[in-house]
Amino acid sequence: MDNIKLAVQAVVLVGMSAVCSGLNLSLMSLDLADLKRKAKLGDKRAKAVLPLRKNGHLSLVSILFTNVAVISTTSLTLEHRFSGLVAGIASTLLIVVFGEIFPQAIFVRRPLDFTAKLAPILKVMIFITYPLSKPLQLLLDKLFKHQPGSLHSRQELGLLIAEHVKHTDSELDDSEVEIIRGALSLSEKHVRNVMTPIRRTYYLFIDDIIDGDKIDEIKRKMYSRIPVFNPSMTECYGLVLMKDLVDMDFDETAIAVRELNLHPTRPIGRMTALDTIFRRFIAARTHLMPVTHGDKFCGIVTIEDVVEEIIGQEIEDEHQIAHVL
Image (cartoon, one colour):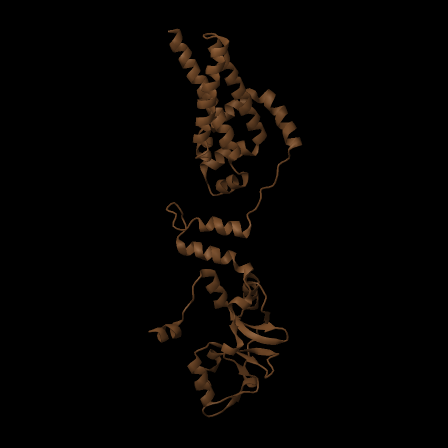
């Protein structure tokens, strides 16, 4: 009977030590910023654990006080039944194997789940040890002030997002992952990487005359916007929109380009980052900008070029599809 009673006491004490050891590791391994994000999203586990993690020093001291008390009680309990050496060896093996190694190996796999489930027990530990743990918490708070959470770099965020590809538990599909990765890389790419060189650009000069033949040529190009330059390619006067030419009869009357309603646009340097030009497109309310290199224009860039970099694939319009078919 005494042996059964001793075994029950040992199991209970070692179990309490296991809870303390596991809680110590799982609670302190949780990132405070991550818990706050999860709590804002309505995660009940994070809401339960967040106050305990915020007062990390108080929780830590309470857990350690409780664990030390349990370990000491385990040694004293076994010492009443066995000799000092046997009791010391037995208590050490029990605590190390079943009170430290196994619980920590288990708790570290799902720290938030275990900490949330055992939060009521931790609160009891804090209540019982409060007269001792509170002063130590205040001392630790003063000596080791809270450090602000570190932010991920752009490269680190890209790697984190890439881990969602082909992952069965991910809420993001492959297309969403590619879009996020494309958006993250915008600041690392420049206009020169996506622009259309001037030699491949269809444009008009300010002194050009638009007649029947010229309008047929423009129609064959199938562009909705056409930039207008001076002959030396040092000034851009604006854009001609095809929709403005629809109701004009160029067979009867030829019209000079300078007489048309030219829509203003803003030049952009070829080394401008794509995230910057994306904002400028929105601010300028235009879909096309001429690109400068030195004193001259070297190409054009459209908002479509930037969007293609974000989504990671080319956007084909009806005209391009018709040529493929």
